[in-house]
Length: 318
Image (cartoon, rainbow, N blue to C red; front, top):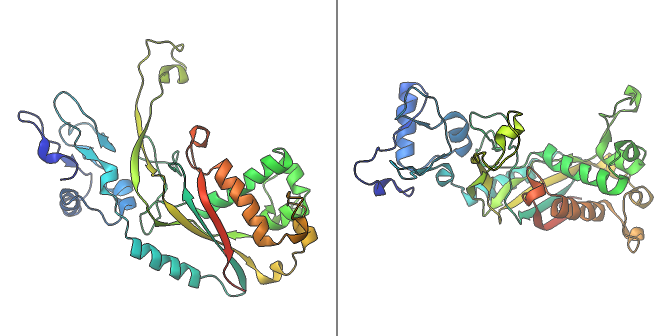
């Protein structure tokens, strides 16, 4: 196998994965594991949990079997991921055809300039998690994550991190809605005009194993003061490699689109040289380039994850 199984030295224990599944299902998964292939990687990670059968009395799921004195590193979960580019392109065409009648639509594409991890803190049998599409099993960016990143960036950069100030801006509330603020009356709650589809991968989608290595875990749990004698605790997690390209669609009902005026959009547009030319496409491009390129998306953006480049948006329906 590609993960080095044939290089096990003599007199060492062979890695024998165990799956807590019904016998017939477990036999099928074992065959898939031996062939180094799972068509639905999300299902593999979330449901076909790999455990170490050598210590059968201990439930220990893992993403990577690490090197030790008795065994080599033999298992890397990222090696089992496959992406069918033609299938992704077909899915992209189907999604475009599924845009509701009576809606304007914009096609958004971007590439990961740095590794990307969405859903790191979600529930998982492992110590970490990553968001996979519930049907197709590949990593993706949910629509609410895309919208939330853009919305939060605008609030921070345009309104000084004050949601109350953002809610006083007519253009912001028209596009993103007005809800969730404590004290907002029911009659004042409004739905945003923009609808964000999930960002699905198009090409160059590859997974890798990353590591975070907190040195003072016992300090963080409140048991000991931080000191050099504390041992680091490596924590492995999956991320999307830099270079992956994603595609999403942003839609708005035509009846709402026709209510938009340059005067309304100029409330949220900060380029003084082009305020007279502002339209919804240029407004989205203006903020998305900043939000995805400088604000990032997903987890660990503070240390360089989740930043995008090659951000393009175009109107695809009239």
